[in-house]
Length: 113
Length: 109
Image (tube, rainbow over all chains, first blue to last red; front, side):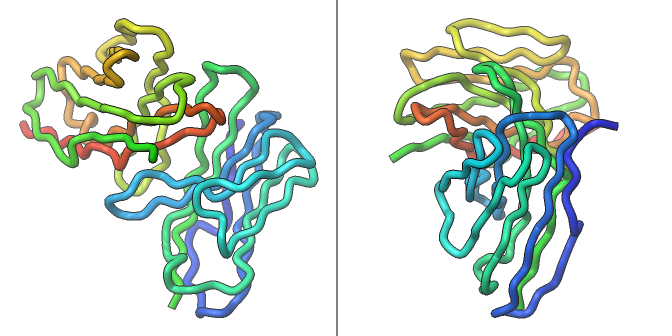
């Protein structure tokens, strides 16, 4: 079944540790995105990539990095996790076109202690 | 700054009609999206508006007025499975989505 796969589903992590959230899509979408979702707030864009080989910063990029080596994969790395990064992280992708919606993975629930 | 406003929570009765409003102030406008998100799940796409007027998709309709910075999602013949959060998002001048905090819709029998 075509779609977006995120891993892990959930994780508890000690503060200061490094963590990479994985995201893979098989829809050949050009654009990919990482969001965090916190209670009472809208989805906030962390980083995005309009096409393989390019990345850009979103609204809340500090403490996170991404890479886009190919079309399918868009990993998100927390270099040194802090408790304020406790959140639900969603990866999304979209094809080219103004009216094209973003498609979301099932999310990673991350708790930083 | 950019802002999307939606009511935090609404309650409606099974079989009834409910209208969820969204007002926005963004730097530029390149379309408005509505998504549904069940608790603990990913958002799923419902509708897209870029021109003024009503877009109908089965039990769901979405309306847009660009001059008023306003949209609504209309859900008819409510079913218990419609209990979810409904997210309004506007694509800004940088073609990024700005998201509202979502409206939690509670359906009562």
